Length: 217
Length: 277
Image (tube, rainbow over all chains, first blue to last red):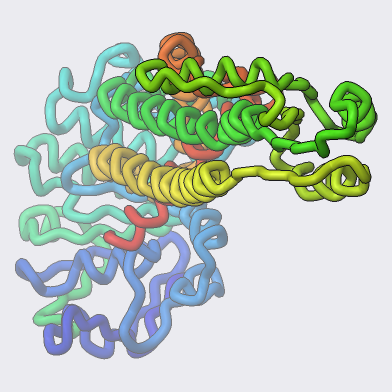
């Protein structure tokens, strides 16, 4: 479970990115976080995976206060989360296969074979044919699918996506949202920040709206 | 082995910064070696010039200088004893003032015993010689050597301070070169973080590649130093007893220093890069 207790995030001295946000996300929830630009969607997600610390309040992920975790513990927490970004954040000098296998390589789990695990998930997403290509040789939708594969390879219980369809055409966006929906059906908690109203209306799920850092249910 | 391979791949992937890094280490090691060898050989310079210290012993007219010379030879740490007969003293004076046509009777000239000693032993030897009853006067001029000693110890201090400064400066320089690499790789590092990489996992390739580049750069620096030493030996061989390049242990220490410099510079760069984030 993920829980926000009166969380505020202030950038500088005055700018409230989030203002006393209280939020609970249960296991296998499909949560859509919406709001205009600068509403605080990305800040909310970044707080979950500990990229930034709250100014006030506390964020609990799996019972751990993220803001209090040491760098090492935070790294281990992130292994339970799959993160997807608008700009894909792929390594351009590595092949698609290497990009997908990256988390397993990093975790250095002796029992897990990164290439085998990558092959399994890439075949599921019909990406195996691109294994030797580099990300820049793929379309935007395919690149985002690669980044989702990378996020899912470690079988995380939470999938966090920050504007995952921001750079994609409507068809690719629908495909990406279907992937998230399936992930949720398989028991994963999925949190997607988006301002894409079409996607929100097309997909059933819990929707929370942010306006100037305040949560409006 | 896997980590080592990774760090090698990393060096080739970022070959320009690696080259710069290697160059900085090579230059640092070369300069450190030069200063180190100056400090190391100052002792040799002192030794060479200390052989030039002479104690002049004047004996009484009635004594036999040969017997006294034999007695002086027996004193510990005396390097050389030469008995200068009055006739030789007269010849010396004539040679020194050829245009003055001086006529000197050998009988009025004293017998002089020239004693060559090490600088550190002067006082003790002087004391021993003065115990010989036939010795009338002992003169020794060490003021020039005292000046030389002051000069060499000043050089020693300056070289030590400069070496320390160079070491610190190169560490900073290396850390800036690496920081450049860190900035260039910031997106890659942040991706690794989001994938659950620990700080050590991210730093490890930097530290390892720092050691490898330190090894290569250190080797280049030492090779250049040996080349330079060859010329230095020819150039200043007259001023020193023997010009020593360093023992294998000293060279190994320098090599270790190069690797430490590489690793610590990278580690430092990473911390600084993080602070800037």
